[in-house]
Length: 261
Length: 249
Image 1 (cartoon, rainbow over the protein chains, first blue to last red):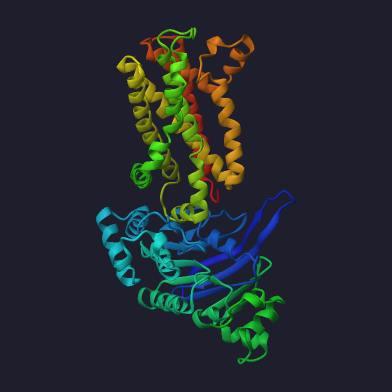
Image 2 (cartoon, chains in turn blue, orange):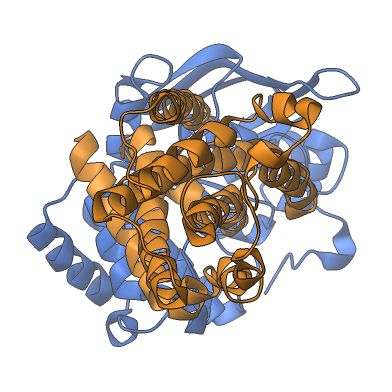
């Protein structure tokens, strides 16, 4: 399979008043075409920083990466054309209608006005938003909001979709619906999906392959089965136990982690 | 592409302004109160300037409108940052410069509209001024808004929280207003204050506008006013562009 994302020694250091903070120390990874990759790690491991670099929102301070053949440093505009990104917090204005947000985003991706209107209607059909097109985004439920956030990132039919903790705060039904949506995107359109999560059940259910980061570097990678076998001791090991063996701590404090729905 | 993107961004934010008509009118409230309750106090006073007291006060109030309104424009971008709206735009290929220009052009449009309302109210209060002079005045308000809104957005991208941004803007806006002679002409000031006011760019704008309001177009004040307004706008938009172009800003 062809590599659609590859990163080498990708790093980001933030200057702070108390000295530089190395959020990402040097990430090496490869994501294949049509793969759903789960990017896991404890809080503060550098997941979001890595994602923001790959989505061109943050300039790396070291290393290099390409997304669908476009170099992050020399061709960020190319990276933007072939990828979609959904932030943890989403990114819609509460006062604006679903339709206007979808059309505007499509036009930012350089679709003509007619194409943007048609694409908004098509996405609304695909993501079950049709009845909501004329509502303000403030009036949507959490699950509907998430579907809209994802629709916004799909307006230009990207080859790569970056999702930052896509199911945080969703009820079990909406989570399951979102997992189906992600699988459908890959199966029907061949979209490569790069998602961060700290829900291990989500990683187990959804991802073809996992990359576990800790302290700003890749601590382990492989299919869930391979990781369980290698770090957990057997294929029957829990992913929680495997994760603990890799990082030395749980992905989130166990009291507020819905490991299973 | 820059034009296409700027028009898109401009349209989005202009629709947003039109949706909140209350805010649109509320912006004129402060200068309108000055016009109604402060303006009549000046009609009999010797202001040391050509023309009626209205021809002195109204240019100052117009610039006050632009000064306060535009300086606070950055608050909207702090909100959009929190909502993730700005970031979701920045992952698209949209021109970074358009994200700034579309916004400041919207601001300039809104302020010219508010300036027209204020001048209409001033006409009712007794202002008489030549039409070309009034139009030149709108030009100055537009340029000032463009400049200050650019700087305000750039600052808001750097400070990021309303708790830091608010006090910072207050610290800039009040002295700017007082030191540029927007309320009363600096010709009334003692020497030291007059000298000090020459370090505030708005001083040159208000002098030029007051000349325009009495029909004097080819004066030294006008020349300095235009030079300062255009130079300040170039500097401010360049600064704003630089901040908007930087990734992660």
